Length: 372
Image (cartoon, rainbow, N blue to C red; front, side):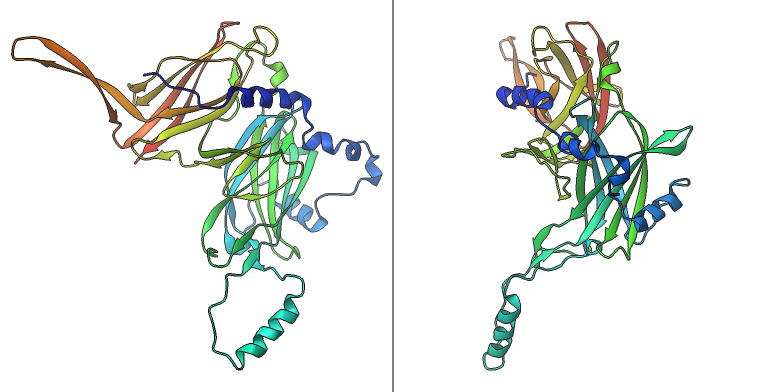
């Protein structure tokens, strides 16, 4: 079966170029990083630091604000850094949503209360709510299995607005943030705290970020992930931000499919970056990928090999198969026709055989998903 890559080639080429020409969050903080250590203010408050120190050795979470790390994804950034995205699940009510008071709202509210004394009550418009909490990330090198040198501190205010009419306080939803970190093996200490720091919840995650410059003898990929929707933003973000229901990468906005769950007839969307491939001339590459869907050890779906001129891969894969139907007419003639059919519900594995046609290097990657 033939498949098409629907991502605009110019957009992809521009994005690859932007990895080398555009500033990332690290570059924007360059001047701050050049300040003497003694004048550099700590990013993480002392109260949060103390909680981190208490839990780092055992990696025992603190549940003042319960949350879980659902996934972490890394993609290329500048200066050999890897833009590391953390997706976490937390109940909306634990992020301190409260009504947003507009300028002059106090006086307007007083007037409304006076009207209500002489007029029947009416249905009010939905109130705008905003979360009021903070996210902190501390990155320490893992040395012989124990947290060692402090590498980075990250702070992101969680200020997300929603209408009271659609707000579900007990619902656990996906939130995200991202930051460029250097290659290495780390312990990430992550905290969600109330604005007054009275409540502090923590989780710990060991993560390894590969050194792209060292990948000269093999192919490797960043995190391969599924997504439901992809949009282009007008510009890339220049501040550490927390998002609800999506994550960003440069000027791209993804709605993730963390469960890897699809309905029959859906199109599966995958995204990843390939390290170690060699360019043919200039910025062009010659990469071949053979995609297959496996049911156990059997091939359920297969497509014609795809050729890419960039190592940044975005590929839609329709979850339907083409079957050949052979029949015999009354006069003994054999006829064949091809028919598209949806695959049956069940658990499957996406297998990718990636080959750099310039160097001859190859690698196989897999990812599980389910059809319901």
